[in-house]
Image: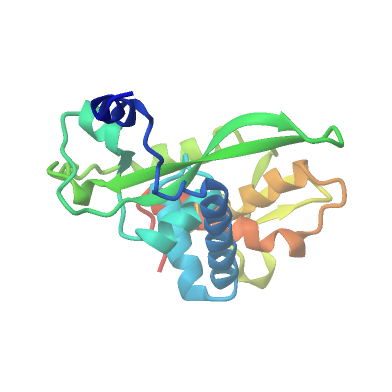
Length: 237
């Protein structure tokens, strides 16, 4: 073999990759830990809870885990897509912008014990503020109060009945024994929406629990009502 043959052979050999392979499993575990930590901070802080619910109202199609991840990494986000989706929309992600991660459901798989588990893939996202796109100026829309209330109670799981008086200064009350939602007469539209949305949440939760207890449903009912109010422009102060 000539010295020149060695040059050709050395060129044809595949080079070793000296860059460490990214540990996706470790990154996924880190994202779950971030979400768990944010969840603990959220339920023990009124300020953080409000922040979470406001973000959830903007991203109502996203899971609680992903909303917690958005809150931890990009809480001011309003519209998010991955890099390719922004490109397909004719929008460029600005230089040096750092992505943030959410978890996208992947394929299900079966464990050795036969349990079915859900796999998740890491998805790198960018907010519209990180792109060349101009945020859309949404025209101010006034929703008729009567139409809004009709939409709220359109698919009520229980009958609704007006009442002249309710205990504890309530504006509305879901009576589980009577399976009826009582609403106080004479309230303003925002007060009706706030109180009825919360009691409707109690009624919905009661459908899913054989051992329904109002005290145990107070937290999720409050959260559901807050999100509904936030999405529909009802004052949540």
